[in-house]
Length: 218
Length: 188
Image 1 (cartoon, rainbow over the protein chains, first blue to last red):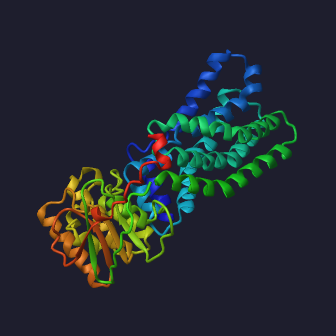
Image 2 (tube, chains in turn red, orange):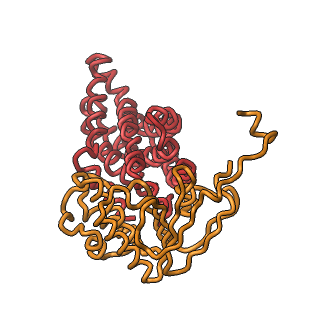
């Protein structure tokens, strides 16, 4: 298990591993927003929380098709499936590796990118907290989507179509925490909902992903 | 639709069985079912721990030979990769990135993984593809060593491995197509 995590992290950081792609994409999305809505500080600070959440979500989505596709192509997935490690554990570890290489950098960078969008001052803490709590759900739900579409030619697009609707609850409550936080309102209700969604996804999605992957390996 | 039916064989510890049959006869299917990757049409698979070598070796090209083997060693819970490296004469290549290996060297790396599995039953699908004559010899020696320790092996191959093993030609077990008038006919 630890070996799989270390291997996936090593692969991500080596040449062609794609580490940083999501972060760069996030930065570009966030920079483009002021260009498209115009340099109006008040408007930007009203939409900042939502835009940052949406950008983080899309950046996360971008790297999902690599989550299993590479292991499928070189046959590692077959070999892992026949190894003594349970498939659910393999998928959980892969989702964790995805979060560490994609989700965590987004969480850490988001407060800095908030400056670009004139995010109101109390919002930084809650943006950070909501992304911290919400992004693990994006990775495990993504692992389920990747398991469903692995092995399909050009499955990346289908993956996005399948996964984006499943991201809706996380987006609603995550952005709500960041928005209410930046307006100085109480965030406890949406934050608890967000945590609940994440915990439920962490508990259930590896099993759903395992079942989908077993079907796909046939 | 059934592909094979009535296949019967027995392997005892220390024995190997060679699967023969033309392309598309169902050798890979049989091995994948036994490996648990594909469910059988009826029944269930139970038995000893297996190690499966498919057509592709599961090698990460950006990792070195040692890193690739270390990874599989810890997946299978074994620690010493030196014997596996030696058995396939990979010691000199161990710090090379696996992406720079030739096809035969990659295959040797893939086969070295089997050594680390500690599994009793080796299921191997065309293990000698892209191996040269000498490497086939190393492979046979590795299989013999595994059998000598009471292991079992089921190998689909077309070439002579020099193993003292029974041969099963699965072409004789092809499932008969259903008779005319069966439900499938309507969809043809």
